[in-house]
Amino acid sequence: MEDEQPVAGEPSELGIEMLPIALAALRTEVGEARALIRELAAMTPEQADSSWCDRLEDEYHDAGAGQAAMARQLRQWQLDHPEAAGLDELAGLVADVEPVRQALLHQLARLRCARGTSGTRVLPGRTAAELIRDEPLWTFSHGQGHDPRALHVWREDDAHLVAIVAARSPEGGVDTAEAGDAVAARLTAEHPDREIEVFVWTPGSAAGSGDRFERVTPGGLEPVPAHDVIDRLAAAERYRCDCSS
Image (tube, rainbow, N blue to C red):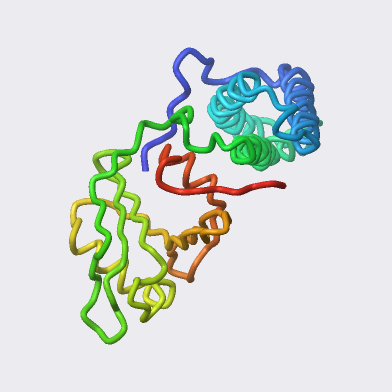
């Protein structure tokens, strides 16, 4: 494995005398992010200014690079100055950054969904996904009960595809969730040169409920918020989200 390289434009190492400054700065940043999470959680869609939310989305997407740089610096200080006061607190704050960031992004996603704007723009750090297959009656197996069902395949980049497979066939039969391995194997055979992430899709009812998504993993199905899938693919015209809390 290659050694990690310092981020361009940043010093490869800071002196231990900078530890109190780094600690104070990160303590403030994490505290501000937690305060924003509480503020966003208490907001109704009408109270949340969309342009402000978009700016927060951009800012906290970029925060990931800064956290990685601080984590590298922390590891260096731990090696060179293992007894330095404040290292344990800094390690705790560094570990908190990503969960706090994700919690804040989740609140922004919730508000987008509640406003009906999930998937209406490409999120920071992503390219627009391209729908390359749209098959209303795709067959993954000729086994009993494996009736054709809807398939959408999205290309995120040259190496990665996202497959959205309807949970059930119009004819009934086996639920896709019960045949996740067979579905994944078939898609891998059809796209042997791509990494494929598979989601089981349960469309919402005519009464207005939103769609439901579950990611197929080796350990089974993992529920994923509909707005996360819709935002990721910028697919507001294809799928529905009905977050209200």
